Image 1: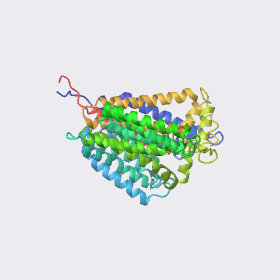
Image 2 (image 1 turned 120 degrees about the horizontal axis):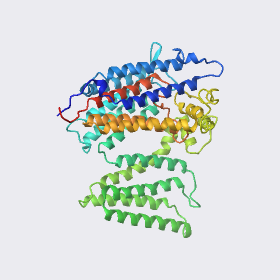
Image 3 (image 1 turned 60 degrees about the horizontal axis):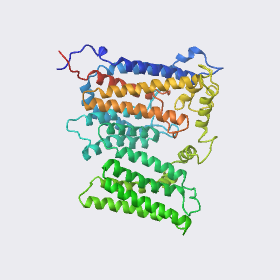
Image 4 (image 1 turned 90 degrees about the vertical axis):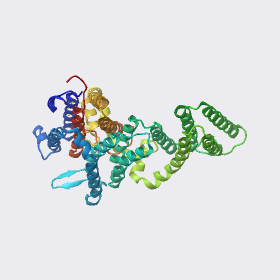
Length: 490
């Protein structure tokens, strides 16, 4: 039977709150370091409400107050109001497109007197809550295609609206919710599709104009067709677990690929892309035939994957040249090493890496960074805040921050696993996935291993909407966790 418990303060996970407070305090210190000027800034100005450090301190205070209020709301109330919150926030995001003023090319900010808020930051909370409530229904089944489509609609609808606000980076954050679907039983096929799409895009774009030895083809398209064969055949083996189909496809594809390459190089030169396309056609037809014979129904998904992968790959060049904006194209080209633009699109990352590298092992000390103090790094207190940490605290300080962040995310996952229902577990994993996505992508773009998409580092990057939005997510989950049922003696 349910164990009687005391006040809400006795049921909160204080370890999570301690990690939250540690990250918030270290984040504020990082903003102090990024905002400090050797000449103009006095230490007392850090609490000046007119300065960014003072504003961030006020938002931290507001977030704690809001968090305390959220802890007073019971778990079932969050669940019952989830759809209302979702619709209201979605409507606000739509309205924002029409009433927001252009801010660095973005239509995502609403001005309320002297305060500017970004509704997209709070849409994450609404989406996480609604997705968890929908998945928490007793009749929900992730294996049911209708339920899976509805989950995807809950995730994708805000993405479309936020893209309309010209906030592509914020929209991409919603891809983190697919990790929640995977945790609740969604087939790994969708994750494989996502990973393979990234591989096809990178390989196709990076090597799309590189000649394949003396043959009249390019390495990019040829490599992608071979990868599609490899991925689809691997799916037959590890997903469908049908050895006969796997062996047949493996032998046919390997033999024809090697034989066509040997023939083109040593006997008669010809375009070896044609055999590759014929092989993909053969794979498609063979998989459908196996279904027709009443065997291996999962082969339909693999056959569709082959077609979808080909369409996706051949659309990459069009999207790159006609859909992406010039600055986005340059960022991708710089990331892939196709272009070096240290004075343009690559400037932020180049200066950021210089700042981090200059910190060495132990750093230059708090408020002693030169790259950041002399404003060499744009957005050094928002999207590129991590470079301030690297310069002032060095490798050891940066590592400590990352360890605390990873401990925070792992703690959230542990809390999610101990929930007594799918609603609490799904919300907990939504929260952990969002934090992980922000953490990995933000640090990745600062050190130059992921594209610069403009998303904040939680609790570190300057921004009231961001800090409050992350705090709302956290405190809501702490209340849900506190209300979980525990079994024991009365």
